[in-house]
Length: 409
Image (cartoon, rainbow, N blue to C red):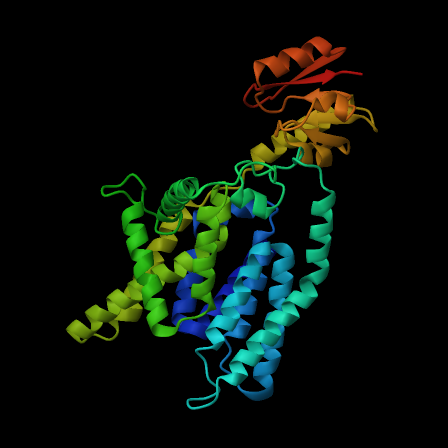
């Protein structure tokens, strides 16, 4: 994971350098790398870091200022990188319309025609979609065959998650405009709290609320970026912001792909403010020196607040998994909350009871053992306990938490 995160930072520096120069790229990378939200996700196996590495590599290649054959090769490389990013996170597909849109405002040279940029953008989009077609067709085929509503997954597909009341049931009612606006306001505020805390290092409960100066500062940075040179970095920030606030649920992990853009907007806002002061007092060195001090301060705070690896929690899960594996024989079926985790830890087939949409899971999936690894309703606990033929209880040696395991068959 550390190598993937390092690659994402290198790609970010590459993309920002091509748009805003080396000084802004260095400051942005440092602020992003020491954000607690960025560091916290180093302890998890996620698709976000390789996705960001490929996404920012693609953006950097598309933002080339080369001409002739080299420009064509870099655009081809950008299309390949964007295709790979799309296979990791579907949100990458939302960047394709912006490739074509921005081409209408570009020329080949100061007085050159617009036909060249438009043709290259269209070819890049067609190339990405053609390479992504196998994945698109497979996803459509699997969706047509999938159980409705989804019983073992939180959501059925992205369309259902965004536009329906129940994210796991495409037959559920569609969400109305008022509910969608309420969702956007709620998620947007939580996102601003997280950015205030993890990028600007402001306490969200500070006077005038930490999210107010956060939104204002990042908005200034975004406007500065658009004024200096509108780029695909700005497009990605806007696209992903809309994705987060309209999604059916918000978690801090979803904000990770927006942290690099927030770091860039922060650096650009500080750079613009220092530039005004430098011109006012005729001190040109005020910009690099002041920006260096601000970045150093943010880096120091970030290092002080950097979360440590949650090794104790991982070891606790591993110990519980080993305990369950000793009691659940090979070939038996396990019902629990964290089914993917305990399927790996125990090497047993596991189903989850987390999403109560279907019929009786115990009979439907011929469950042999039930592990209540998270709190459950009393009625479910009683029904399983009454049907159990044998019961074990695992007591965590660190916090004393008791986890029951029931044998049903």
